[in-house]
Length: 372
Image 1 (tube, rainbow, N blue to C red):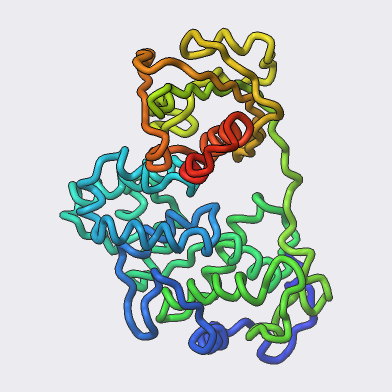
Image 2: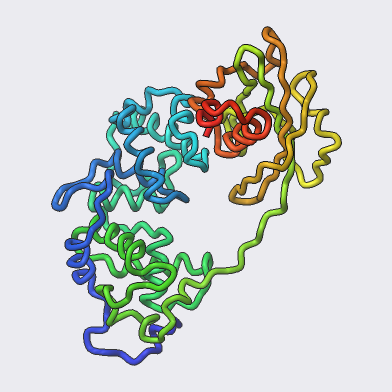
């Protein structure tokens, strides 16, 4: 039993979705993917924004969303693009499996549904890269389906509203049931977005602005004076540090050696600087065994650090100048430095190139800028 169930009942103590919707009508956030008041959002825009917003902030997503809509204004246009084009446009946004799923989903919508997103949750969940959350988001916001997409903001609002004592992730099914119990008979999409906005702007992780909350009189956590304690989270297990080497080969004609990562696995199909495997027991003394070609490799001072979802990484960077005409090893290619930023380089590889240029050739200002 939650704490909320043991609190003294007050008259009209149940959260009223009408109060939240009235607040939303006055204070809704303006976003490039959100329809104007009284209008229905285009399903393609909802889906594209929701995929981008997973594990990423609204501020970061905005320019990427605009870029994608400019390049591919419809799901059919996105489906017609190559995966490499999509990965290039996605580069820097992180969590690159989302980009691969985005492309696969666009093609599935065209092939299975004639380029029109299905309007029911079951059919949405059957599409590549769409789970319960994204299906609920697209279904409710684009089609007013009776569903609540539960993201981190919604989890925070609901656990505080009902003082849910169970810790995440165990509490997720309960939170979803509680959120669904609040659904109004209409305006499901507005209600879903109102919950998200409330969590993002009022019911924030630290120092929530409870005085401005439309549900402050019925919030169990506030009644207990424990707003910031919720949601409870199980301690995170930090992944073990992995290490490796990255080799930046600079040819005399102004090109750099790059290659494509395997399709499957971490950073699948992305472009990378050649390097060693990333392992817990990597020994930098043996790093040159993984060098992509014979050259006078120079180890750069310091390391490049990056944190993935499941582990932190440290890369030692080696740089070498090679003659014009040096052949690229199998699976690699020479790319002009001035257009390297157009490649589908994940952030960790952009860090590697920036580190190499800053340490090895600080006078090459334009090159440094182009790879960040």
